[in-house]
Image (cartoon, rainbow, N blue to C red; front, side, top):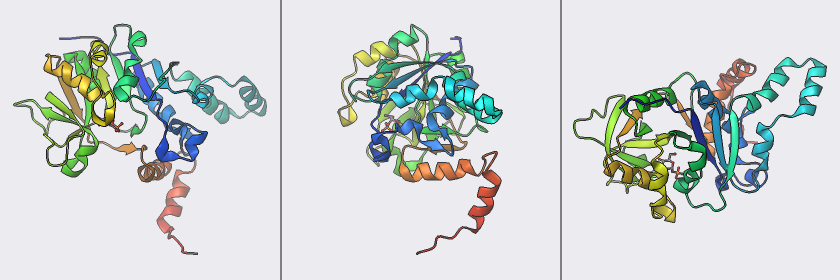
Length: 297
Ligand code: G1P
């Protein structure tokens, strides 16, 4: 099967962000910055870099700061222009220029599958890339591009995978490589999936990370998916049903640099790892970091 490269992406951004309270009382977690750029802008930038120009954000009530961030700010832009602040102006305009962004509200937190189900009208019969904004992929390494290529070749479902080893696997959706598939290869055919298997019962150490390419059939499958792990509608369960019914499923095994900003410790590590590469402050920060020793008072 040969098919077109997907042009649309859905980004779930409706979570309460409880691991980031108290910040998330007022600031959506997706706007937490890496130096000065929100994680959500970085992820939309990744989609844009891969020729995806239409983005649907699934948000919850009260997350209006996200809409404000991606809308033009004419007064601020005029003030920066008057000052001749070209860099500031470019930075303020960038989020409004990356993609055409639309919004849909998820009224109840019923799981990732339920959130993705809100993309049916937006997809309008086309395949959809899904990017979870907690996962940042280093811009020197490629994941989404190769996934879109695999979709164009095979159709069906394409997943971003990492090998997390046997201890971590129970935190993720896990895949079963098809018979004869080389789990060491870059593209792995998949015969089954399981959401967050018990430690010791996982069929592999290959974990699904926050990058998916989903075919239009996913919406009918989601409609028929009962609540699963945690009482939530799981995208892994809907994909499993399609897989068992014959939809091809492939994984692109990512061995590059990934930053998980969904957890406080990992978020701080991500800020440090990306700040040392920042064009303005990176060199000074790295020099300072080399000598940094915590003091105890
Ligand atoms: C979700 C999915 C899981 C996937 C993970 C990737 O879990 O349900 O299959 O491995 O995202 O980040 P969550 O992290 O929302 O618990």
